[in-house]
Image 1: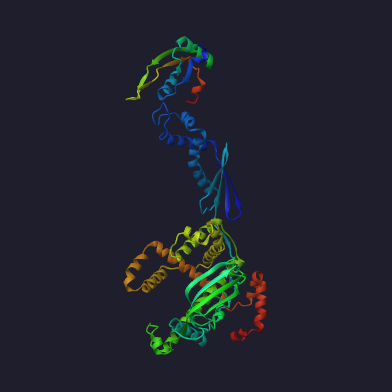
Image 2: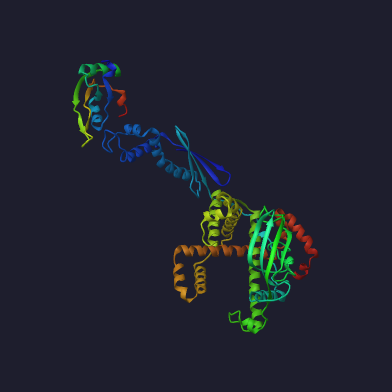
Length: 94
Length: 460
């Protein structure tokens, strides 16, 4: 897996905005990515130092009823804690 | 806020306002607070998204627009105050620059009226003279109104009423087609064209005739003006006009408590006199106002004219029985634009004279007292008759109604004052000097004429 394929997008929500005060930034990542890969990717892409990475696999959620039964896919969420003072530009101004 | 103001043609003031960053910031903060309650930003509950994200979400341009929506009118008010601009209408607001934000407001201001020396205006009142002939003419008109037409077996002549089928053809096209129309053969009639009536003289019931007559050069329809028209007329009936005798019975038929011919004549003379006096008064009023207008400098914003055009248009529609403007325009076959242009000169004149009159009553301290308004209302109530008195009285109890009567009285008084000034004799010599500036030629012409005219003798 290429390093640039690891990070999908930043996840900006009300909750995650509050996390930023504690230097934690949240991404959606490739599902098969490991903590080590995520750490490397964030450090490479944003030029920051990552202190720790927590990941959660968000389970798929059923959507629809009757004949139209389906689900939202599962995805992997990574909460990346940066070294104090480091920032990620994509979240800038948030 | 940095403001520069500039005076423009047509009573307009242009204000250029530059918005300071702090003001903009404050306005944006306000916009955020308003928007956050309405806008859904994904990932956030309503009202919880941070400002930077909201700005990103709705877009910088619409976010700023929201901010300016409130800020610009506010700053405009401040600017008006600061520059001491007496605005009398809504401004045209326009953003001219985004960063730093600058907007331009163009606003109409109070009209400027600079009166000429209206004390020097002199006009002469037309003498109202009612001759016996006028009265006779009036009686003649009344007789004709009561005329009875009796069929006769002879050639049609002047003052006969004939029944005709008429067809008018211009260049192979039928322009007139009337069957069984009643036509009164009167001398010098120009209906439908001059000398038409003449052609009918000498025809008998059952006769047919074809003749060609030209339409006048100044006929209102361009298609017809100056063209020859072939008329085919067939007469089916000739009736003679029988006028009632002028006697007491005729007088009585007029009603209004008239018993004798003498009384009728008396009444007619009165009516004609009042009408003539009213006409001459109206003419006098016009002359005076025109004269003041000619010597005054008046500048007023275009919006005045436009509003007056609206009013004139509405009045016209009312007179035509409250029809819709669209129907009227369709009937006339013109656009609203044309119609407005048509009304514009009259509107301008009305605005002008009302401005002048306002200025004059300011200058002359013309005032209307409450008592005068009361007595005017009483008069109206009286005219309304007993049955309606209560209702009418009520109608005039509102402040608005009193205001409008007061306005009317004020205008009336002012005009009267102007006429008084203009008809006093003592300062007569000033007349020529003052009027010479404006109507120099007319004055000299009048003078030349008056030396020989018999009127001169009358007045001395």
